[in-house]
Length: 183
Image 1: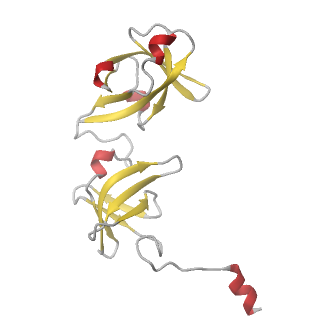
Image 2 (image 1 turned 90 degrees about the horizontal axis):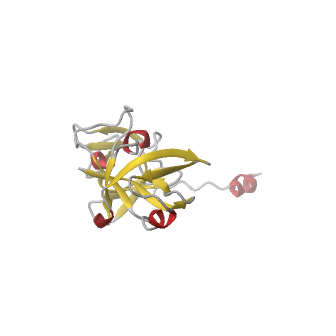
Image 3 (image 1 turned 90 degrees about the vertical axis):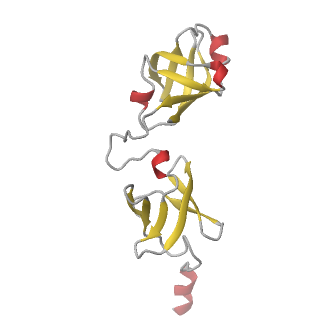
């Protein structure tokens, strides 16, 4: 199975280094020197990582055969793709690869069907499950401990405890003006 692990950014310096936007929780494993990665577009690769280092909070990589700024800049916006065994699990117990979560049934703790995960959106603050409901509409569910109570890969389901208004129209509207009117 192939997973996108990074996107190449702009060239850094004049010796062929590039910045990368990391898209994996395991960059030390997937983006280590010696790793051979497929690319999108495919004609750009495969690329072999020669060196990697962190500079000002950004990961910089240099690939074999890329020796100058011009060659590095030509790689900009290329996706780096790692081959991963579909049975492989992340190192941490409560971590999951996207492919493990796709198509899971989403149910509430009391067994009410919500829908099926069709997409995972990785935002800076948190990840979101995009869930297709039985009627074809979509609902976004934050992948946070307070809402996603359990991921059961054996049963192929995600159990959630949604706050009022997340998956229905039972939102509780509270206003500070209400308490002022009563005084």
